[in-house]
Image 1 (tube, rainbow, N blue to C red):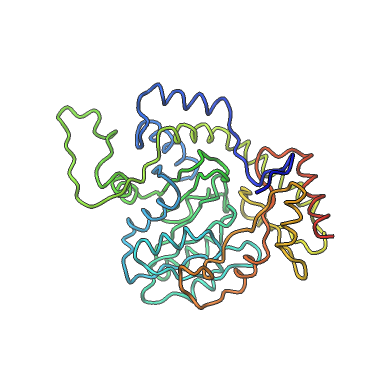
Image 2: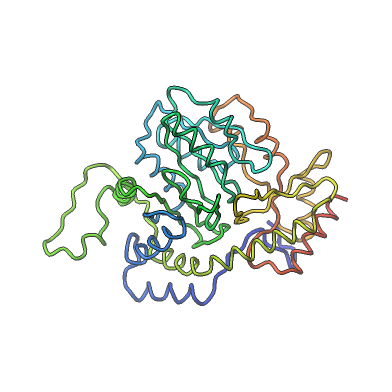
Amino acid sequence: MTDHPGSIALGQPTVGDAELAAVAEVLRSGWLSGAGPACATFEERFAAVAGTRHALATANCGSALFLGLRVLDVRPGDEVIVGDYTFPATGHAVLQAGATPVFADVRPDSWSADPAAVEALITPRTVGILAVDVAGQPGEFAEYRAIADRRGLWLFEDAACAAGARYRDRPAGSLGDLAAFSFHGRKGITAGEGGALVSDRADLIERARTLHSYGIEPALRREHETALPIPAFHEAGYNFRMSEVQAAILTVQLDRLPALLAARRSVARRYHAGLAGLDGVRTPVALPDREHPWQSYLLTIEPPLSRDAVALRLRAQGVQCNFGTYASHLQPVYGLRQRLPVSAEAFARHLAIPMHANLTDVQVDRVIAAVGDAID
């Protein structure tokens, strides 16, 4: 973004000696490829964090989303309702499964799919709801669940940013029939890349496990057989496995998760206090019945200020920043003519400022001062 001396990073992982030791242990083990013992350990630990019975480690969140749609038997001709304000990996997964994403406008406070908009979009072709935890904060899952149950649909949680979040005392990941997570470098816990698919349903995860390893049972499952195991391929699968190195790093990151969440929430509180009431800037909302993990901190830059001009001024001061995320329906890949005004406004007005667990109070105060200068 910028080479300004002393620049403050938009996102930054928290890693150290414990992660290095975990990688060294994997290297000494001789098992580096995916779906091995380190992945099995991580899956067991992460399922507990997500509040589900089962977890599958994947190459990234996009593969987890696609696998989830495959095991839900999404087919060409189906429609899937998707919260519009999201990185387009969500809609892409629906396209890749052969179905049509139908985007729902979002609430103006949390930017998660508006339940009324979701229900209004249901047609005889609708098979499910893919609801996004925007910036990590879970959406209106009690209402989504009621709609899904009433209309005979499945509910899939895109929890890409939501590790450690909670909704009405339930962990993100446990709020739908399936959930997908990301461990990209800007997420709350990270191995640089990686993902997970979680569910209480063993049948869904077991089929996903076979599909994510080319369509056969992973080698770890066959390791202790007394006969020579020769697996058969009953359907064409994919190589969507997480590596053992990534799984080892992520298992250490799970140990750090409570401290990482506490640090991000402390930064958010300091931003709230320092930026509240600043003319032309609206701070994000943390809804009272959920615990926000603050994967991103999204300011709304209000008219007549230019969000882009504010961003360039911040970067000139060494404060990294970026737009929030996408109004998916506006992306050319989907070929849509609809306009969803709340999502479109968020796309035009949101500005992500530095948010990670390594930020110091001095850095946060510098960001706050820079925002004030940039809008003056």
